[in-house]
Length: 436
Ligand code: UGA
Image (cartoon, rainbow, N blue to C red; front, side, top):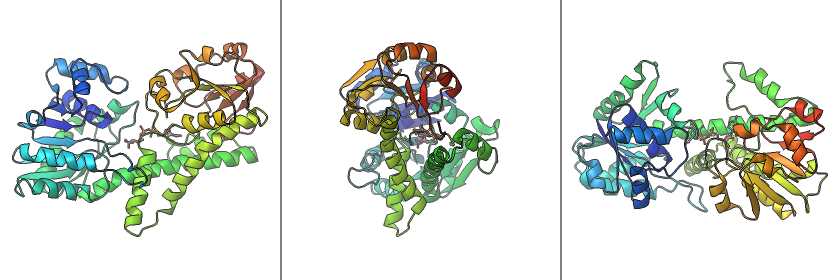
C-alpha cells in the first residue's frame, strides 16, 4: 500500500518510518526544505532512540522517501496521513487547527480516487467533520473518506509503542475506510493479538484526549498523595507499589515527581477542557489536575530553598536533567524551567547537566553554566537537584558527587537516588513523598 504522510514532526516521522518498516511504500512530505534535505541524508530533526537507524534502513530499502512536493507524495497513495502540529492557541487554550485545515485544502486537488485521509494529529472532537467538508468542497462526496487514528506514542519509546501497541483506535464513518485501516493494522499486529478498537470518528477523537487527561490525573493524584506522605511519615514509592499491584489500578504512571510536562499532557488537558466548556460540560477533575500540576511545578523551587535553609541568594545549584523526561531532547513544559527561573529570581547561580537537551534548553533558559558531565556540573555546588531521571543520573557515583560538591545537599525530585547510600555518605537528602 502506498502511504503519504503530511508533516515530518514527531508523529509523522515515527509513524511513516514504522509503516515503511511494515513493508509499505511511504512518502513523507513537509514544507520545510531544510528538514527534508536533512532527512534525505539521514539527519533527523528530533531525537528519538533508534529512529535514525530505522529511517536509514527503510530509505536504503527504498520503502521510505521524503519530499517537499505534495502532488508527488499523493500520487498513487491509498492513505494520506495528516500528522501536522496542533499547538495550543496562545491566550485561548484550545488547539490551533490551522495546519490541519491547510493540509486538507492543499491535499484535496491531488487526492487519488477512493483514498482515505487519516487524521493522526491530536485534534478536538469534530475536526474530522470539518476536514471532510473542506475536502468535499473540492472533491465529489463518496470519492474519499476521512478517518481518525490517534497515536499513543511516548517520546523515548515511540518505536516500540508504534510497533507493539497496547491497542489501535480507528474512527471511521464508512466501510471503505474501515476496510483500508483494518487491513493496514490487522496483519502486522495479528500475531500479538493487539485489540483494534473500531468506532465512530468523534469517539476516536475523544479517546485520545480522554486517555491523556486520565494519565495526567493519575500522576497528579500520586503527586498529591506524595505531599501527604511527607507530612504523615509514609513513603510514596511503597504506597504506589501497594496500590498499583491492584490490577484495577495498575502500577504504571504512579511515579511521583515534580509534575508532568511535555508536548502532550499540558496541551491536551487544556484543549479537552476547552471542548468541554464549549459544550457546557464541567470536567472538574481535569480542571483540578491542570491547576495542581502548574502549582506543583512552581513549588519545586521552594523544596530546594527549604533544603538550603530557606535562602538561595548567592548559592550555586546544580540541576541534573533538564528535559521533561529522559530519552528525549524535548523541553516543552519541562518542570526544570519554572524551577530554574524561580531559583534564579531568588539569586541562585545555576549549573546544569543534561545528556541531550542542552541545545533546546539554551533556547528557553539563560544565565546557566551548562556542563557535559554530571560530576563537572556538581563541582563546587551547594546543592544538587535531580529533575530528570536519565540513566547517567540514576547511576551517579554518590561518593564522587560528594567529593565534588561544596555542601552535601541533594534534592531528588524523581526518587531515583538511594537514600540509604546518600545518608551513609553524609548527604542531607530530600526526596518526593518521603519524610526525612
Ligand atoms: C504522552 C502519553 O503517555 C502517550 O501515550 C501519548 O501518545 C503522548 O503523550 C501524546 O499525546 O503524544 P509523553 O508526553 O511522550 O507521552 O510522555 P509520558 O511518558 O507520558 O510522560 C509525560 C510526563 O509525565 C513527563 O513529564 C513524565 O515525567 C511525567 N510522569 C509520567 C510522571 O511524573 N510520573 C509517571 O509515573 C509517569
